[in-house]
Amino acid sequence: MTTADQPWPVCCATHVRRQAGKTAILLIALIGFAGAAAEAQTFTVLHNFANGADGGEPEAGLSMDRAGNFYGTASTGGNSSGACSYHNPRGCGTVFKLSRKGSGWVFTPIYTFSGSDGANPQARVIIGPDGTLYGTTTYGGDSNEGTVFNLRPPATSCKSALCPWTETVLYSFQGFTDGVEPTFGDLVFDGAGNIYGTTPHGGQGDHGTVYKLTPSNGGWTETVLYRFQGGLDGATPYAGVVFDHAGNLWGTTGFGGSYNNGTVYQLVPSGDGWTESVVYNFRGGSDGANPYDGLIVDQFDNFYGGTFGANGTKVKVYELSPSNGGWTFNALYSFDTNQGIVGKLAMDAAGSLYGTVYSGVPEVFRLTPSNGGWTLTGSWAGVGNNPFGNVIFDGSGNLYTTASNGGPSEV
Image (cartoon, rainbow, N blue to C red; front, top):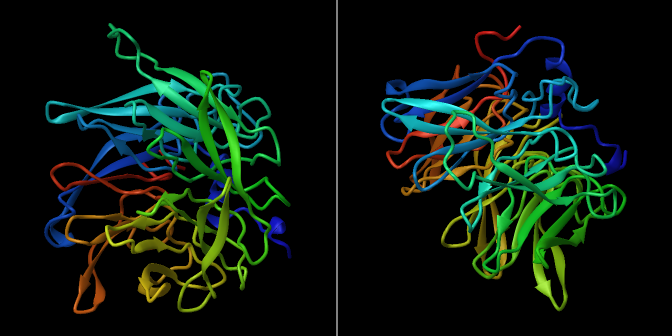
């Protein structure tokens, strides 16, 4: 089987299953999870999605602005006209905002996709250097191959609760050469205002790309930095890229590599282009397999990530550390499930790691370094079904995330 023949990840096949019934999706906040033992914690549901004007199936996590407002995406719903595409006949999706009001929260859809402007966002929106929102849609755009978009708030204050933002499509993917269908990966900016991202498909042989968008004459120009070949160099980068402190890009591929179980790769600027090298090949054993989530990096250029797992391989949280001019891989913790981590991990000031597990218990976890190893010091179950997204902290140490399925109206 070639990498191009690999099926869509098990995690994402839930689209097909959920189309058959009504679904109300949970958006949750974990209160005080970063503090005492998990048994003492509570969680609060901030919004149950009805798959209507508010959206449905939030597959990405949240971003927070300086005022403490949260922003996120819902991959379906929002489109009262019905079917958006054959991929999701439940609407084209929305972008929403959550704002505090007194002791509660106000949920506001700020944009609804209609197809030509993008469709079915599966990645979260990020807050750019200018304070506006940037994100991707998996489908829609000029060729229905996905988009990169920007959302700006209204120039003047609104007099109604529903006050849509203004969307601009920065780039519509045209086909296989420039990339196809960006999915879970976060966008990232460099210091010059350029945007970097990935597509799991397209490129050369449909094995995925890493791309750059550069501001140009009032628009944006796309450049493909690397096209994966589908062999030893890796294939299918579902996650986005991150910068290390030297300005190199790092990411993961879900497949490919020496064992076709995925890779961690590095892109280094070289002349007018970028040179790719594989830093680690997942073997599919005690190290895990299929890293669908992205990497996070600490101040010492240690990288942390998780694996999704396949074919009975357990889900792993891992670390890559620089060592004598090379890199050392450490599996930090193993979860007793084989469908696991999709959203990026988060790290608190004390060095503990937090994340979500797509299928299994716990659905949200905390790992703490202890006596040269790592210990599961916090866990939460029963917070909705199938969390794809990242977790995020507020200023008080509370954790917030989304669950793509579940809720009181699910059938």
